[in-house]
Length: 339
Ligand SMILES: NC(=O)c1ccc[n+]([C@@H]2O[C@H](COP(=O)([O-])OP(=O)(O)OC[C@H]3O[C@@H](n4cnc5c(N)ncnc54)[C@H](O)[C@@H]3O)[C@@H](O)[C@H]2O)c1
Ligand SMILES: O[C@H]1[C@H](O)[C@@H](O)[C@H](O)[C@@H](O)[C@H]1O
Image (cartoon, rainbow, N blue to C red; front, side):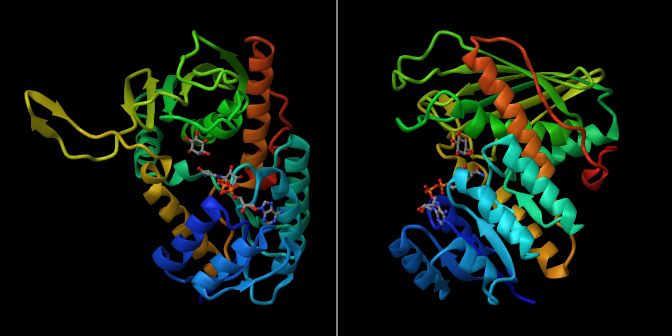
């Protein structure tokens, strides 16, 4: 069976995922595209032999669409996801699931009312081979209980439109999701402090930021977010346990020795760093839709949790570094919890 996907939002990542669904993943086709920029929708639709439709609601209602991909701007996600749930169609939503915790909860409630999981959120790091190997090691218990996690998330530069709260909302949100999954533990507080700011940034931006999270088991996570580090796109993660540690591998790269130096290139772009993770993410999502089974990737509950935790980090940043406890509802049994 070919899964017929409708794409809402044909911008940068919508086009990349459209290419992925049509050229990389087998068993999927993009049959409909919509964008508030109708010219863009028509152009992307023509490229893959799909139909351009006027609105997200039209696309979700289309009999030619089995599953929906939401890659529009964050504040529009909730409306499209709720419409897809109401239509009973599987929906893959790029992060964030919604920009407020209240909207995330509305989605969670709508999905529970439907009685089966329809939503997957686009946190692609769970599909990265390195993080998956770390999870395997941690699950054997050979390192003992995890105690500390050290992370760094560095981008070479960001555009002027990137503001200080985005360090949590747009950037650290990836660590927030992947660490909840890796540790199988919940984050209960956030604190954000700012060291001396780099001079190589737009003046309105606080960069770098140091984020400290605590989990319900007492694990402490320190995360450096530095989005104007100049030298490359660099993701580091090390989990320290009672009996040893496990570290995220750097992407494979050839070593070059010349002129009395030995080095490897550092990637410059998150799209290259996580290209294979994105491919795997879509392969597994398409396979679950084709099989008619529930998706196994990040759920709408994970989308809700990520939004609650990023909200706490932003509140801490705005308060000048106070420790902010998260205000999260108990996890329902529907999402593997006890409530
Ligand atoms: N997983 C990741 O690492 C990752 C990376 C980049 C972006 N994203 C997420 O993907 C989403 C899109 O990001 P982008 O960089 O592609 O943005 P973009 O601005 O390039 O594209 C968004 C597109 O959505 C369209 N759009 C906006 N509202 C719409 C609506 N209601 N209906 C239809 N079309 C609409 C815009 O016209 C635009 O073409 C964001 O939520 C972003 O956070 C995730
Ligand atoms: O939207 C991007 C993307 O999510 C990247 O993975 C992250 O490194 C960037 O900081 C963020 O701006």
